[in-house]
Length: 237
Image (cartoon, rainbow, N blue to C red; front, side, top):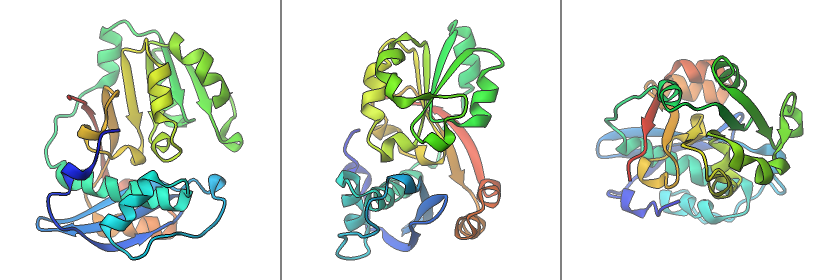
């Protein structure tokens, strides 16, 4: 993933944050207002609920992007997503499913068992799902088979959690024959400048920050989702 420092065009301050369930969140404020970023909290990968951050700041939290401490990584990517969303004021929505049909896509891999997405894709394509978390592996293959099988697909949809667990680059490299490489889900809020190797980003923009925060603090996906608008955009380098 490309460097994020060219997005730090002003001094942001952190207004609120939490390593929460189901999403870690960071709320920042800049000259043009506030922006909320989230990242899936990968609690199954947490070894030690501790952090090495010296203070609460954007600069300090961004150090989590290179950490192997999952708590720090979640806060780091939530901060990066907040900054990304701050800068993503205008974009053109596209229908990636229509594009896939037009391009003759037949076989689709989904990395991360996102059940609503899988159900939608199965209406038009031959779909295989890969999942790391054993608790979510119902009707899905273990992610250990990705290395062997990913080159065989025409399109790959990847959960944004691949950013947090550090597997995104491996997936992109192995999906070398895929015409479509789509990062999807709330954790996929990154700026297109940071999406090297991907063709599309499909995520959620928070339009009602107060309502979204209430949902996140209550651990309610439905409340959070109702405070957002979904989007799918092409990545142009």
